[in-house]
Amino acid sequence: MLQMKLCGDLVLREKCEPVSDITSDVLNIMDEMVQMMSGQNGVGLAAPQVGITKRFLVMMDPDTNVVYRMINPKIISKSENTCVMEEGCLSVLGADGLPVYANVKRPESVEVEWTDETGKKLQAKMSGMPARIVQHETDHLDGILFIDYLSGAKREMVMRKVNRKH
Image 1 (cartoon, one colour):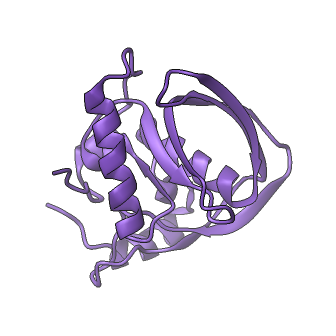
Image 2 (tube, rainbow, N blue to C red; image 1 turned 90 degrees about the vertical axis):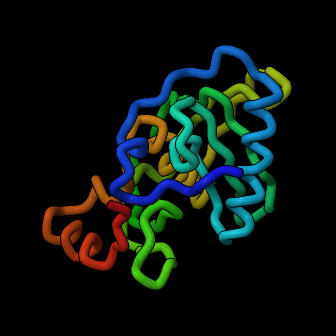
């Protein structure tokens, strides 16, 4: 059974290694991650959030409910245009056990390539929520949390609400 890692856990700050083989272990973990994500009303979950330092993630397009299982995802281009949207994270929870939210500025659209669970190479241009989610989740694979994009004062305000794991 996978365990959600919370803010303060060092695994969330590690740069993940690429997946070299798509094993049944990886596929089973991804299945469990999809269950965890939907069970917590999330739209994305990256491997380090469940303590695994490999480059894979699961995400759902909230507009279409399509679930993506991305192995070794890479953002290959970002739009010049940016937008500010509210972001939360299943690893950054408040004392009430719910995600803490803050506004984050990111590119409006991105082009991403990845390998799916069957080993097929895919590429897609994403905008709106899917672009936001894939950027947030691929950041996790590089040890970056959405709070890292906030100003010092704003980050401090958010961190005061966060129930840290010690």
